[in-house]
Length: 143
Image (tube, rainbow, N blue to C red; front, side, top):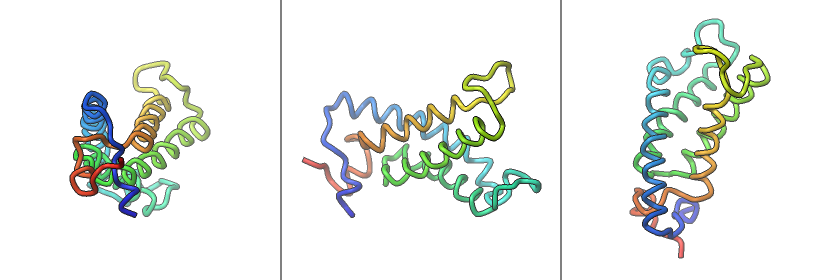
C-alpha cells in the first residue's frame, strides 16, 4: 500500500511545475469546496435529487482534496476523489443540463472547468506530486 503513495523520482524543474499546479488548483478547489463544507449534506438545496451522502463526498473531495493537493499528501487518493467528482460534474452539465463545452454568455453553465480539473487530477494520478510533497517526505521516492 505504501508503494501507491511513493512519488516517482522527477527532475527539479518538473517537480517545481507540479508544485505550482498543485498549489493553484488546490487553492481553487478549497475555495470551491468551502461553501459546500459549510452544509456538506445539503449544499445543493432542499429540492436536490442527489442524496446527502453524495453531496458530502463531493464537498470532502473538493475541500479536502484541494488541501491534500496543496501539501502533496495522499495525492493519488485525493486525485481519484477529485477525478470522480469532476466526472460526475461533467456528466451533470453535459448530459443532464445540456450545457455547452464553453459558456456562451456570462453566468451560463459549461463543463469546461470540470474537464480542466479532471485533466489536472489525471496529471497527478499519472505523474505524482513531485519532490515538494508530504508524500515524498513520508513515503520516500520510487527509484
